[in-house]
Image 1 (tube, rainbow, N blue to C red):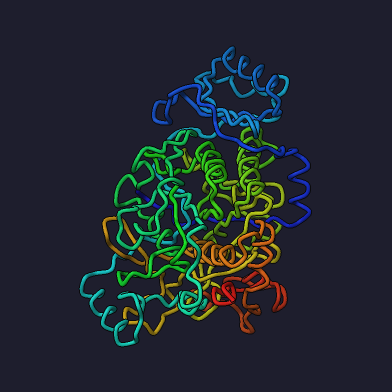
Image 2 (image 1 turned 60 degrees about the horizontal axis):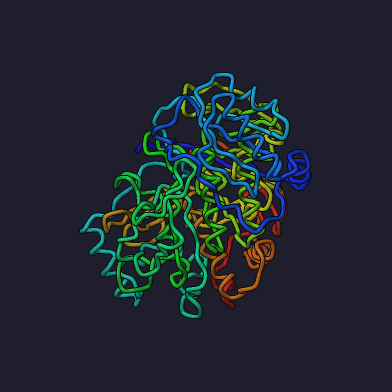
Length: 509
């Protein structure tokens, strides 16, 4: 699976949150949003386009909208009636404007254009697989240092946030589950199998949850992203391989990547958030953006419908007790700027360069209300060269790796070491790797404070973070003599680190 070199997440200042919520009139209070499947059609069998149709939530309105969908050539694939989201397939080129004119439809739009083959994750660069010779070297160093896991000597990231010491006090509760919404997780990996929750896992591709055994696993070994993320969160301390930030909690897999092009389409993510909420997941990790638009502009009816649908689903999850954590992206952009050039959208067809206002065009799901936004740091504790940033945009920071920041570890690799499919290990860097560190710390906080709400968990994440000031010297992340970014703010809150770098040891104390 090919990987895009840059995926990013924009900040959402409080005024934008309020205006976004008010303008779309998002989520009703509800007990369940489980989908009623009205067709067995899968994404791979879809007609010309897939759509999300967002309606009022009363049964009469939904019933009349379903009839209208059929009358204009659409087929309902899944109906999330409690949040008023219908997933529809239609080959009618006029389906969008015709269904938007129907009474009771609040927004509707296509979720894709045509298919290419990029992926929708936020890792930076290709994976570096740990060789047997290197693994032996690391294991020897780990044994000499008295570390419990053979490869722990290379896990500088655990020590950077006190996760190694936290595990001695509280490795996390078995009653807490973190769902990895991603490319799938190889639950047969010896570092993951003991902590894997199959009952909270599914394949949501196509907008309908498939819970058959193994449906949540990656398609191939090249779809390693989700397995790497899962290991960062909850690899067991079992004397095998590596350790996770919260090695005592459970981890689940909700696969959302399309089998043809690897993209993370909106209907898949809607399904994932609702499934996580209805299956008692406490934390979700989201190291991606919803394709095909990097930014979804509210003046475009298709993009507006995507924002509406995914936001309804993630707010539903929050109301049922799920904290959603997401990566900030790898473009090294100031997310509080006046304008950003988006040259990658749509990523399922030929992209068209456009300049967008990040306060009017939203990255989904990471720019949605209540989602924790995470920037990345390297071993020196400074912002990773690729990590996006911005005052008011970043909530907290965490280790994501940086190839220019070299640690004093056996492999001298500044990236993050974690699990890969087929019982292997490897290094990745990106805000994709920072987000699961925060999800792991959030799981430790939930273990320590079992009755904390998602909003309270987010507040605790910020309170227990290590305040980190802006650098005193001009920031040159790649060392080429050019200033790459400017940090704005004070020690307690700034554009590079938000409220600070998360601290696992404080989380368990």
